[in-house]
Image (cartoon, rainbow, N blue to C red; front, top):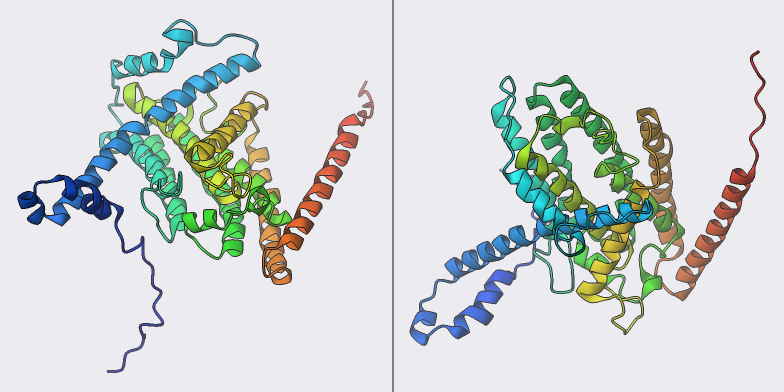
Length: 413
């Protein structure tokens, strides 16, 4: 029987390179430090598994500390915007306040609705928590600081982040509460809607780089700030802002926090949760904030690459963290500045504006790639000039619109 599909027809998808960093660590670090008799008979497979488990334990233990720092930072930022001091009593300058809140949540009663689905109710926060932290496996924090170098890294991130919707729906449905169910459905509609412009914005980067690997995307931005993908074309510049705004909606941050609406009596899909299960939702939210900011830095702002070619200014792991925290601070700034949108405004912004603009960016990026096949001084210079003219024009139009006085309304009397 003849073969229908040849080997060349089937796509080759390797999740990572053939070399395993854990195996290299065992060969280069552990075995040379063992006695000769033990090193000769040391099982390489067992050592690889133990090293991977050890690093996974360190990762799982260290990453949850990040939300504790971000919660304290947001409380301080909010206090600064509102002309107050914020947490000041627990620890020096209030630095132990979030730790005290976590200890309090540990000892609170773990309430489970008696009429709800107990298994799904207990499982939902862990699904959201696990998916939020699984995204970090494909984010390159530095040239050699990477858990796993997937050659389909962006596809992996989009797939894992989409599973969070299932956890939200599980939390709302299993609570046996109409308010929680409606909150989960609003959250699912919002996340699914804004995943479309977010994914289309990422597609513009993939079209320019021609790779799904996060490390290769960073390598393409190694020539300084003007080789960052945000400046490579006017369409990636627009795509960055659509990506950033859509990511705010993805993590349910103000002005897109309709599923939670924390200033109201009902808190959305996690209304019936208490104790540490309640805390897991917020730990996942702040972890997602850092994750989407890190993805934006990797795709558009050079990743670990420095600002100037040949110099390590804002480069490496410290530079990556600084750029990521700058985007996190911008999210906090927006939260304490803008009011919450209505649900119709939320959907109109996505379906009537962001999605058509995202398709326009894809078309424009394809045309730009045909005109400028190679990234050189001319293509980047023309791109920066178009971006500069566009910003000046947008500033002028916005200034005239804001300065226009409203027309007097005719009284109904």
